[in-house]
Image (tube, rainbow, N blue to C red):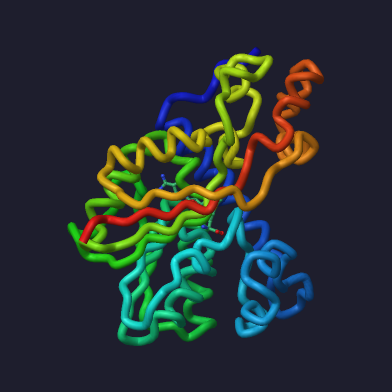
Length: 280
Ligand SMILES: C[S@@+](CC[C@H](N)C(=O)[O-])C[C@H]1O[C@@H](n2cnc3c(N)ncnc32)[C@H](O)[C@@H]1O
């Protein structure tokens, strides 16, 4: 069996390459002579056909998310928002409309191709109250206590040091500020599986958001250690073992597992809606 990916620099390089290629593939299919643009089922499932229909038809709306952190955030007019791992910018641009011109939205991402697509999308939508920043979510390039709300959709699992991400998120939140995250999370104790945690994490793909996922109790502990209160985690979707196999197809690593180990994973990996607050 291979070794699990543990070197932080190697993890970030793998993730950056994966999402750089993914957005270029999506972006590359657009253009005046192409008809392959348009929302995918994911965008419609998460944000609703009506919302997606308000965006320009030639905008690259590719979502790599696992939920709808915007709906969770319940944004108010005038708020300042930060999206950790903003990808192609869909949630930043929708958030910018929700907070209005009295508010402002930052998108933070480390992948150049994602930032370029997000920037083009911003021009297409005509949003002026947003800015895309290049950087690492473990070291947010913003001052202390400057945002009202942090959103993030399917990104924190990709960071090697989740404690550092959530401490830095706490640092930039204003007192009374809130966190609204959608992420991939293991439901339950991994020690009860018929395979070791190290072998499991080796077999799952980091870039597809599974290998680096926390358990629900680890997520809660890390949020509370960072200083957050009112922590809540709710499962919104459970992935079947068939889903895992299809996402891991490229690596074919799960194929090395006994059938009962794959079956034991059925429904254990979830999308979670995670909310927390910084005390006022
Ligand atoms: C699964 S995609 C989600 C993108 C977007 N939130 C969405 O819903 O479509 C993950 C994104 O997070 C970014 N990312 C992953 N790790 C990061 C890190 N440590 N710092 C900054 N961005 C990161 C990737 O470049 C990618 O754009």
